[in-house]
Length: 296
Image 1 (spheres, rainbow, N blue to C red):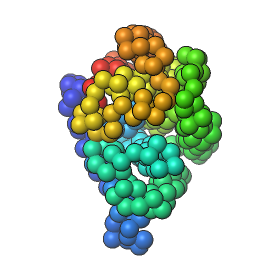
Image 2 (image 1 turned 135 degrees about the horizontal axis):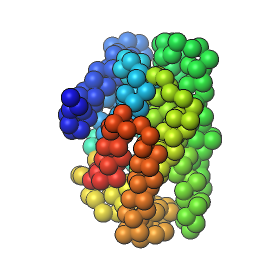
Image 3 (image 1 turned 90 degrees about the vertical axis):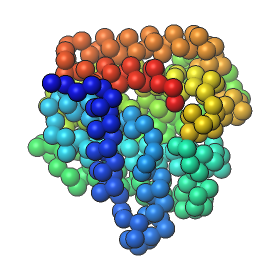
C-alpha cells in the first residue's frame, strides 16, 4: 500500500540527509575548514525538491533507490554550490540562506568560493565513481546531462542572463528563457537522472523532460510570488530581495494574480505529460502540487 505523501517526503528527506552526510568529506579531514564549510552549506537545510523529484522519477522507472540517492546527491551538490556563489557579494550579496547565515558570512568569501568549486567537483566525482547503470555509455550520458544543466547552457548561463537583466524590462519569453536555464535546467536534470537509474524508453524520458520543463518554470513563478508576498522568517532567506535589486520577475511583469494563474497552467501541462504512466507517476503529481502550493 502506498504511503501518504507527507510520510513519503519525510522518509526520503531523512534518507537523503544520511546519504549526504556519508558522501560529503568529514569535517575533521584536512582541509578541515573547507570541509566544515561544505557540510555547513549542504546539510540540514532546504526543501530538497530536486532530490525528491529524482526519487520520484526513480520509483517510476524501477530504479534501485541506492543508485537514485547518488544521482540525487550529485544534483543537490550542484544546487548547493550555486546558492553559495549566488549569495556572495559579487553576485546577489545576501546574508541569509535556509534560515542561517550564508557561507561567506559564516566563514569568509575565499572559503565560500572554494566551497562552491569543491561541491561542483564532488558532484561529478559521485556520478563517475558509483555504478548507476549497467550500461557505461548510459552512465556517461548522465554525466553529460548534469554538466550541460550546470554550465553556460544551463544554470550558470541563466545566472549570467539574470545579472545582465537587472534594471531592464524583459518580455515574458525572455524571462522564461532565463529561468528555463537558471532554475529549470537543474530540476529537469534531477528528474532525468533519477529516471536514468532505472529503465525507460526514450519517448517516456521525453515526457518526463517536458514535465520537468513545466514544473521547473512553475517553481520559479511561485518563487517570485513568494518573494513578493511572504516574509523573511517564512522564506528562510531575505524577502523582497528581487524588488530591492530591481530584478525582472513574473510578478513585476504580470502581477501577482496573473503569475499565480501561469503557475497553475504550467502545473496542468506538467500533469498532462504524466498521463501514460498511471499510478507510477503518483509521487511526481504530488510533487507538482507541492511545488505550486508551497508557502516557502
